[in-house]
Amino acid sequence: MLNINRWNPAREFEAMSREMDRMVNEALAPAKRGNFFTPAFDLSETQQEYVVEAELPGVKAEDVKLTLDNGVLTISGEARQERRTEEQSYHRIERSYGSFRRSLSLPRTVKADAISAELKDGVLTVRIPKAEEAQPRQIPVGTSQGALPNGQTVEAEATA
Image (cartoon, rainbow, N blue to C red):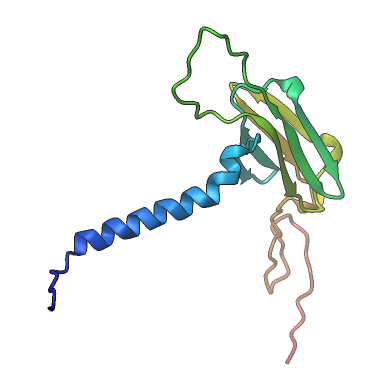
């Protein structure tokens, strides 16, 4: 006997959703079991410097280490979990704790000896000044009459 089943597109989406959940949970399983923390980074640039901002909520300045080695800036440390008491019964823990390490390659045109860092309100701000030769500068353009904006004159050569 032949059974005819009506196709239900919602059932297909439910199955696909379950499969996606399963794949994501499998991919994140090592992260959930591990004891590590990955801070979010923002990297911006001005004419004078590069600025790295890292979210380090609850991390103390003495638990953060910055190193610069062969043009690679590494920010490492540990986000520590406060002590739990026996009276507390946790239903869910979502905050991440543990060691962290993030590295960032820097251009060669930075002043390595002038890098500064400050941890304030859970945000680590690292300022990396650019070397003088890396900063943009305006170059004056002369005219065919030979007058430059700063009063100097120059001979204009025509080439054919």
